[in-house]
Image 1 (tube, rainbow, N blue to C red):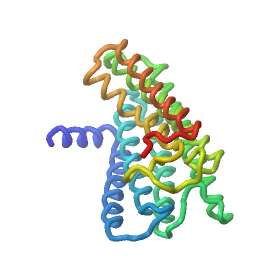
Image 2: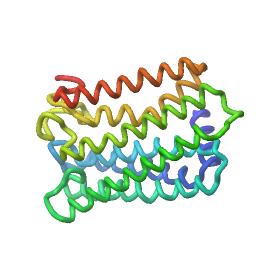
Image 3: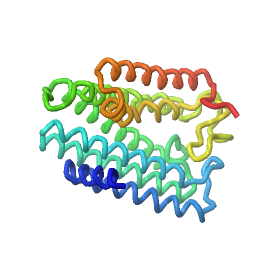
Image 4: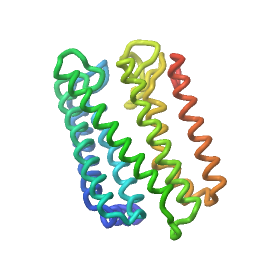
Length: 258
């Protein structure tokens, strides 16, 4: 527990705005989890509140990770601009997803009305802007000199951000087919809570794995691998895993067949 307290305290010190936004998302996820236990509202046969819970938790991990990394840049103006942009854009997404969940309707891939179609487009724009802004932060880690950071840890941050950006933009693949499933209709059997399809391909698997390289690779590099060579090898294998699950989905095959 002391580790958790120290981590939270350090995130607050490094970036107060992203700390509070991440904490708000975490608290929102907890509230929605409670709602999900008493609500019968469903979307595509799944508890409607699971989706905003997942988005809220994922956003907490994203913004706290970026708060931690951007501290090393020592560029207050850039950090503030990124932090406000991400807070407003992802805050908009989460609130709309939760609102649609309460109505028992899809937030993504919903072209049933001009309004829902327009909102889906706005969410796509918001997600793209966040990805491109994060890509720019990643470039800063390639351009700058970070003598105080272990080289293997620096490469963990670089490769983590690179894979995050690539697989966040992979969302365009799902958007182009207007579905997260590939090779079949949305809905049907899926893994508990995650709801990744167990009968057809599902683009969310690669999306999830690739984007969370942002946390996995720097943590592995700093705490376990401790060499640049092992960090780069881990990044390559991690990228291959994410790419494999993407190819699997494109072929219409489920990540786990049940």
